[in-house]
Image (tube, rainbow, N blue to C red; front, side, top):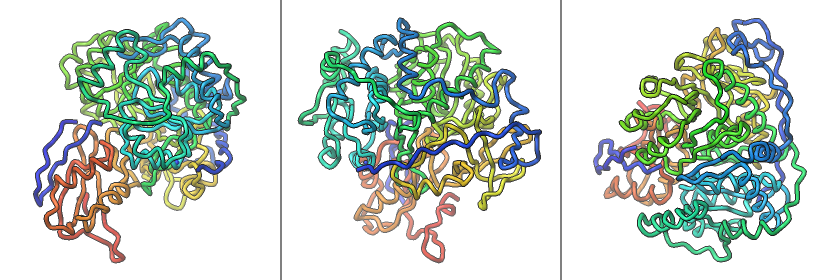
Length: 603
């Protein structure tokens, strides 16, 4: 997203966009309600009566129901993949590959090291890293050792990091040194006892020495930090290789990931994704993508482009987990905002599957060198995280010869709930059909099923739906219905063929390049500035990000400037949450009880 200069004026002024917690026992895992048997197409999406109009549109080779899961834990799935594909490359980063066999060996060593720290089964371990080779090692080790992964956005501010570490009760963290200064600011106020620090170059061989030199000294991307008692990632691996890893009995309803998401309140909550949730979604996706190979033959060794961050549920499930299940190579892109560098890396591979967001597809199609790449191997372009805009989809197909297959889901659904058919000849503009063993209901505010073609809230039931929010039974109750549906907060309708289209969001959430931004959080932060009397945040359309935050501010201090507020936001909000526009007003529109009317501000 290009930077726009801020101007202190009464009119809208664009601000500079950036580059892109003690836990009680969790509630018992929610059991996904079994999907009903197929029924004839009906005029109503009658979930309670079993009508499933989408089955009439299902790909011929995809079953309506998925078979029983072959594994009880993600660790078992990944270990089996590592042994089955031991000689194949699993992940590649900055020219260095790591084989499945090496991944198993290193994850075993790191799991043994974690176990040696005396962490109890189910302990939360945070990962705060971009797409580097250490991520899959750490993720697999944590799961195999019987712990829970807490994914953390590495661009978080100290305030945001502190909340997530405290809320999850994380006892350990693996962090890239570039972000260690953020942890330094808050670690004493958290339950974290063990800190492992990684560097960009340490797993890249001899080249890594140069990489670390450039990152630290030339680009100065590693601010000074001090974390007494920390252990270097490679030292932990070395120590762990001399220890004995003790296999742990991990059950299907144990929590695999705490995936943090905001929800309507803006209070960041951990979606409890149990092992069976994520395993189910991997299995559903594996069945679904087989439809693509009815059009193009499946290559013996698949290559995935992994430009989306692995700490985000989309890339975590689609790239890391499904990719490994398929024995694929994932090409890790640590900084996809560096489009020239990204394109140069793509030129080294014959890639087959390309998950992305609208913003990424848009940026790439506007790069001349990208359009010159060889796309002969590209079979699937998967769009998610935010709505894919039709003009972007058209440019992508023109550049690559491959259309974007759009899907839909949320952190709470592991994440994929619906997707378009992989054999479809073109972009549809819908979010597609429910995956196998998944039901979609369109409901009104009284929880009644809506007729086909009428707008209601999109509700999702299936084995991929979370067990609930960590330590927040009240919030869980708000989003789960008595018959097992998760209320997405998104408004849409289903057509006669069973395809769902999103028309609006019930939530006030702002979606910036696939990341959720919650107005309440922005307002709470900005309202703490001494020069601010009142503030409201809304999302406004943006060509590059889909939406960006805009603030409407009533000043307490008449000398308060846009620049001052931008600097304040930079200190307290991570990049994608920062406002691009700030407008000063003398008053904000309110209801008769004093609630600010965001809808009037949206215009």
